[in-house]
Image (cartoon, rainbow, N blue to C red; front, side, top):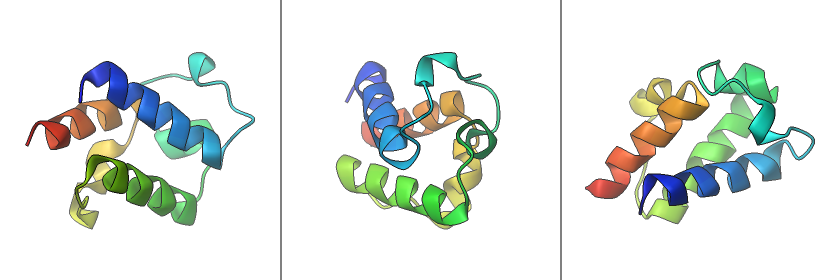
Length: 82
C-alpha cells in the first residue's frame, strides 16, 4: 500500500469518527486527538480499524508513534511495508 493510499484510508477512518472536520484544514504535525477532538475510545476505534484494513495488529506501545496525522501515515506506511 502506498503512502497516498494510506493517507486516503486514514482520512476515511477519521471521517467516520469526526465527520465535521475537514482533513485539508488540519495541521498535519499537530496532535491528532486534539486536531480532531477525539477521545481515547475514538482513538482506539481508529487504530483498530486501521489495523484491520492493513491486516495487522497495532500494539498499544506503538500508539504514541501515531500522535499526528503525518506521523500516523509514516507509521502505517512502515507497517504496510512489512
